[in-house]
Length: 319
Image (cartoon, rainbow, N blue to C red; front, side, top):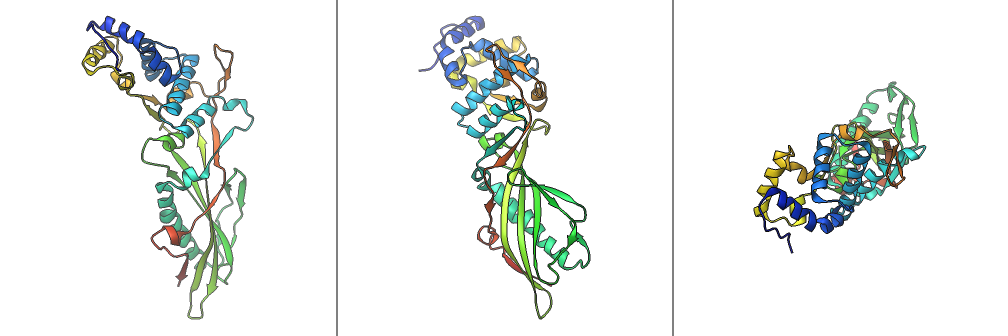
């Protein structure tokens, strides 16, 4: 049953809503707070005028809403850990690799740029006798965060041999602002590809991709000018009848509050930077220490381009 209001005076309407919406607000946000107080917090959150404690409180309400009402388990967990990551000497989280592995954007990146650059890299090595690869020392982040050091060396492929090539790129997880996008908007996707060459009597080489291992990692921080967005649709969720919404919106406008704050919680980078690196004492005695951290998968995975990439071959000829 929806909210029942019998008066159209804005003050009376808001007072009625405060009385009738308390249980629904507690259910959605996990807080005992009136609707008018909640709207005020959201408006000040949008304006960037909350105290550090108030900001943490709004973030925690957003986490509760995302987890319970949106069923965004990963986005909620990542943001929740960010609030306390500074308590750990080397903060990091592990996500299930399958959550990233099975995304269309990841497969498209592997079948597209990664496959193309690996094939091009093989061709470059076969036609660049005496050159060193990579040209400069490099470091690749491994599947569990370990450093993989790459030292310039001549390729063994020309004479017929085996070599490991790496390709990494930043890939958007999805185009939709759902759980995974808000958990990790983009990840660094890494391919470690083992190739084997064989000289052909007629000239050229036959090259086989004999192993293709993939993994991802991400930095959970607030310096990418992206932020996250949690759709709230507050009046819909509270069951406010349509005929009363113009009255409420007019009342909000008179106090300088944009009605858009009722539709979604936009967590912007600049807002979060306000508290990152601080120690914030909460009224209940907790100490919050927001800090950036690294995210890794719980495993790497094997990839078969021939099975997933419209028949792109795992064996090819270079002339």
